[in-house]
Image (cartoon, rainbow, N blue to C red; front, top):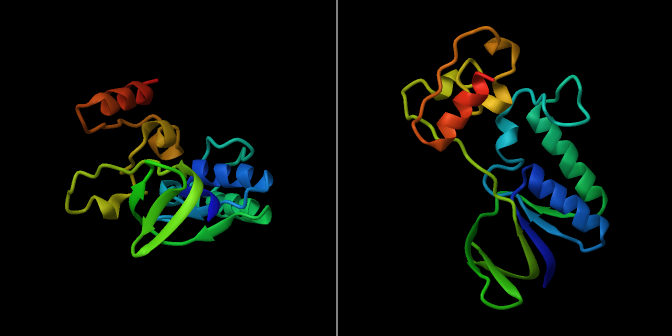
Length: 165
């Protein structure tokens, strides 16, 4: 039986792991299919406190993991939660064929990009195609250049508002 299981290994997941580990709860963090989360796809993170020169997203996630593990957080890689039962304690999580019971679950699964499905879209990532105006709009490569936001929903409208500051 686990005390705390954290689903997700982005900033929120590693922060939860750090604080629960420091509280001596011995958390188990499940990385999911993308260890480190979406931030690992970001070349330079310039809006994270403590890094005035910016930091590579993968390096930031590795530092957060190392800090959480220093205090006793356990990590399981590439584990996917396929089913849950939150109807009664202890809670049950199915990790493929394995069942894990826990007193507490923290869900920190984050977000994912919505791709257009264009032929060369993936090839152009980090070369002008980006998925976050807030995160990437201030990068040197975009300054004083026209920016196109694709989408018609609330998120696209919010992004274009940020892009035009």
